[in-house]
Each structure stands twice: as C-alpha cells, then as structure tokens.
Image (cartoon, rainbow, N blue to C red; front, side):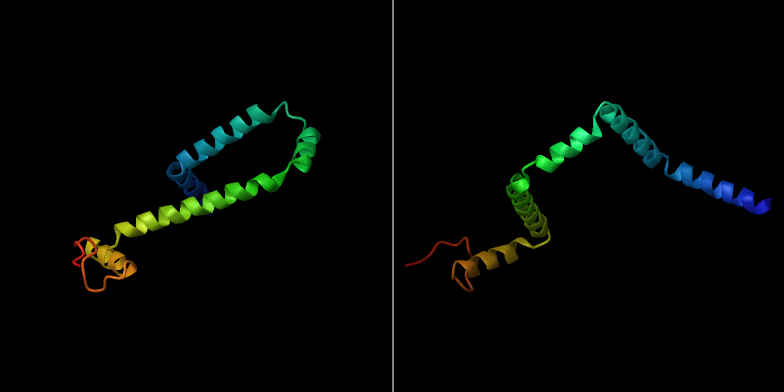
Length: 105
C-alpha cells in the first residue's frame, strides 16, 4: 500500500506543478468541441479534398523570409556596432576605413 501512496503523491505533485498546462488543455478541448460539434465530417473531408493548396506556397515562402529577417535582426543585437560598421565598409569596398566617414576625392 505504501508504493501506491507514493505514486499518488507524485502524481498530485505533478498536477500541482502543471495545473496551468492542464487548464489550458481543458479550455482548448472544450472550445474545439463547442466549435466543431455541428460540423459534418464528410463535408469537411470533401472540402479539404477539393481545396487548391497552391495558395500555401507563397504563404510558406513569405513565412520563411520573415523568419530569416527576424533571425538576422536578433543576431545583429549580439554583434558590436563597430563590427557592423567594419562589415558594411567591407561590402562597400572601403577596407580599413569607417563606413560612416566621408570619402575623400
């Protein structure tokens, strides 16, 4: 009987630690049931079967581009400003000079 009591107390501890997760899952399940209770599954399947999925391609490409831009933006936070200026100067072909200094002719 002692082993079962230990298992129950471990389970109760896990529930106390993860109650927000369990509440969120319960609310999500109740919401899905409420929204889908009147949907005919055969009609839904037929609609998905006849859908034109070509529209997902531009959306997926846009999503990938946005995530790359975000990653570059966040990565730029970790780079010192003078290193960024040096990289820009390299791109502009002005080795060894500040990217922000005016050019002399």
